[in-house]
Image (cartoon, rainbow, N blue to C red; front, side, top):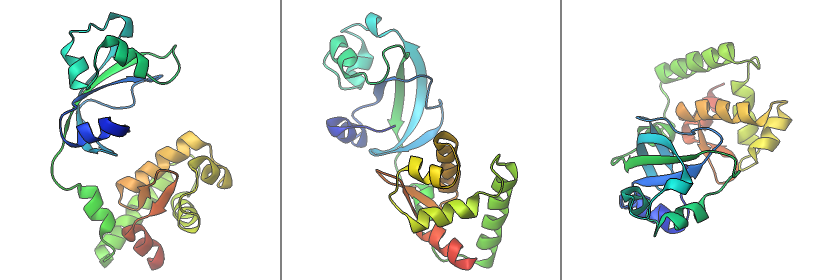
Length: 194
């Protein structure tokens, strides 16, 4: 989830603990922790709501830092036919373990073997053959390139490509940028080891 302007500041300060989103389907899962542009948040609940039935006196409006129900409806983005979801969350304090992992470029032989095993498993389970090394090399060669352009260059569709890059990110190998991706120090160290 991304938060704009004052919402980003409010989430980062722990003051905003709810958000309304119009999505074709839920994009977050209760109980999971997500990295956002305002810090890490844990999802407490996700439920579909009818925006026309939101009351001006609903506590969730204030938790989302909205003035009233009309303000909530006015700020909804996306296709008007999509359902509206109320997401409740809280800020997760402390360092992000994935950030610490990504920043570590000092890979031991055991680290390298663990990475090779994990990437081989992703290659094996993927529907696109051995994709991990080619994807890492493409991101290294063209950082900050739109995901759709990277996917096209690799002969992939954009949605599945983005999901696969997220798997690499979970291993601490890539960073997501405002546009595109770049390799982390760990990702660069892994490629240098090949």
